Image (cartoon, rainbow, N blue to C red; front, side, top):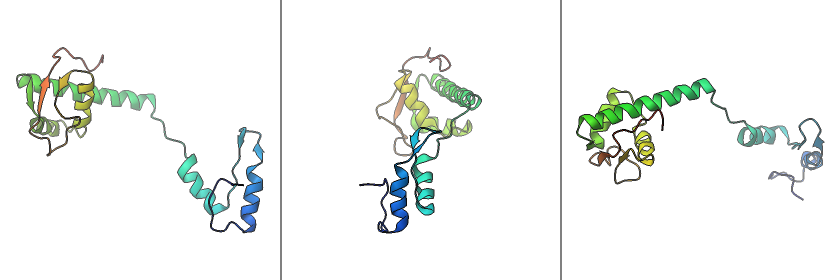
Length: 144
């Protein structure tokens, strides 16, 4: 019979209590309540039951706005250079705009068929000579 955790002290009295306690139901939450000794309880709670923090709608809207802003300057940089340029050039322009997510922005824009490049994901300096080509000059990141 498994109690839901692995312990090298399986023969101790607290392990037997934990097994009995695990069979008990918590009526308020309607889930099986796992009872562990204090040390194992802290490890269990920190690794498995800590809720994932959710982004507020205001923070999500701000992140979307920043993403749109970055995509707009990328489009403008490509248009200013005749519709294509190297990844290294975009990295230098991105530093002026304080963009640390250029690779992700380019991958998003590639998946939306706004631009094209040969690699699946661009990394600097390994792909600095890779050419990025603007495919859809009418692409609007705010509506995409």
